[in-house]
Figure 1: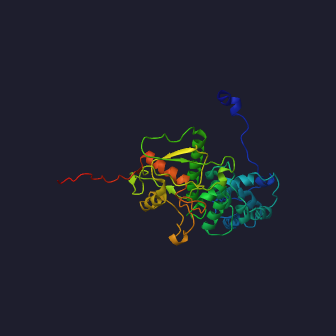
Figure 2: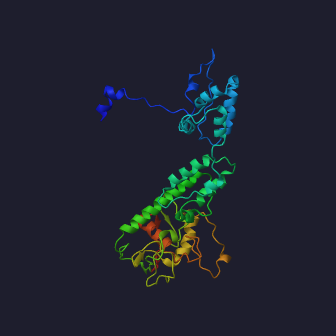
Figure 3: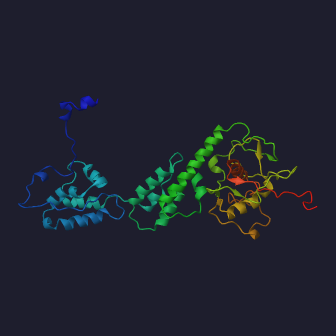
Length: 357
């Protein structure tokens, strides 16, 4: 194929041409002696700070010397365009523009994107967040309505698919780039979680010889989609060094785990889960980890007086279950122990004999 393209016959093929929207006779009209084509300011149609109306005004000022020659203005107008604007001009039907006044009116009446158009934009379930934010930004650039950037960011957040809206509801972002970055990272975590869920078989943790809590988890298979479940708001921070918490201790001998009363089940786990730490202290453990900045959470935690007589999960910012009964928080802590990021607190040695007889 490459050899065929290099043949003389192929090189003598037709040269690519672009179509001009005005009649051919306009290019045949002679220019006045000594006329020089102005160095026009280019308009690409992509700059949010420049409109087609402003460009028409700027172009007319630069053509002040030929103000009385509208046909020549029409001929030179293509020299002031680039990018998307030039493509738009060359895609106009041949001979569709007969006068400069017609071209001027067509440019000024070019359709604009409204706030309603932006508000109607939605991310599809199979569309990557980066692609959606890019699509939103391109449409936003064509919107000429003046509005604070934070309102555009809120519109983009509202347009995200439901799994991302739940995760970032109420959170504030400085710009669309930060929103795209955070949402894309969380999207990758959801994919990774789904892959682990699909590939997991048998018991998740091997039963160790040390003291553990063995918990039977009830699952609700096929009752709701992953998007309809609660989404964790808090997350583990990236720790430079392992940390130890007083509440992170081994379960006391013969102690039964707290009764399971409907904590959030993120997937379809095996019926038996093994935990190496005391599940009755998850609430206190959350406080310690938050104090050591091992947990990041954007939401405001309720005050003690707000919690009286009510169950509340700090991990999900949810009033549907308690932190102690949250399967997600248990799993995150257990994973931290297994990975070496969290260390079980060492009990002080018990003195059984008098060291000073």
